[in-house]
Length: 531
Image (tube, rainbow, N blue to C red; front, side, top):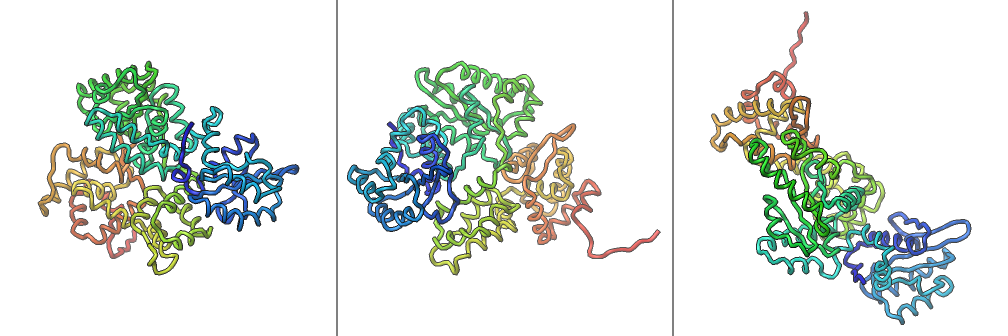
């Protein structure tokens, strides 16, 4: 029987949702969750013309707090509601005497002791096969399941693999508490269960690696051992054991791919396809790969046979970060609030609908910016006023200049020049034109500064570095085109150039087209001409 620790696994809103799902499955009737806020005694309900059933989910650590809340607050609410039936779930383990006390307190409303479900009763339901769907849906359960991650680490014998697996375990622990499950998980899981492997593709920052890690966590709870690949598939082949259930993870599997070397490319992909074929035929092996979508498409053009549609597309799950629903955006915000060190008054301030709505509806909303904001603005108990965090948060979303400035300053000088070349051009820009502009600007820059080193591969290296944060590369007719991932990058670079007159002169001298001179730059004076 599973032994999930619901208190550690769930926030209160997660536990309400889980309770609704498991009671709904048990009763075989639909239950509706109440809106976030004061529940008025109802967390979930089933109401028709004939029956009114109320459910209350309580996340509590100590029984004395739990029973006090029930007797002094919830009982009065139940008397006002007058439901036909009342159901209670809690994260606590309840003794028989405690169940008796609750049953007696709610005499006339709780009709059976089976409607009082503590930790043990909930785990007992999850032990039944028909409830496995509930278990799979609530991903945050898996991280608390009987020290499964430590057991996996202890069983890893290979020293290098142990270090790689330890890194992955730490990442899994970090992302799991903030993760919001959506349809991408079910899609990728379905492909994986049918084909034994899946390729998770998408733009940089879309959540590819996070999705992969949540899939890994799911299968670790099914008894699989993790194998991490960082360079080539031989890393996995050397530690595969026929008798063991093993899941192989290759993050960004085309990230360091030698597209310009046909011989290396052929050997790399032949060995990869051979490994995939063996995984497909296996009864106890799984394989998860991730890649940026444009890199995958580029590889398919260059090595069509080895990366054919038959091998790739039918097993691919595309993650699109721009398609978060409004509810998922709210959940992401809530998770960050719940696990933050913010003062309670700062959090309560956001309960007002107009405040949290202005965040999740913001045009610049993205999980990356949300995460970064919580790292930057951590107002504790000594905050000046309760709306301090919200004000900083909104100002940050309105003008994420500081966010892009920090990222920009972390880039190499060459990468900064590439971004500025793209900015003064009319994006999306053909990659060959961008390279020509980049090369000329670098030559001009080196005449004035000595902190720039250029090699034949500098442009390619910069493109790869920037694809993780700033730029996207897409197919555009005869060749690839480069553009910014987020429109706010343009706003940042405009402000940056206004403060760097020395860089402006270099960009002008390095321009290769008239368009680059008129798209951004202008004079202080207007000249009136008549014909």
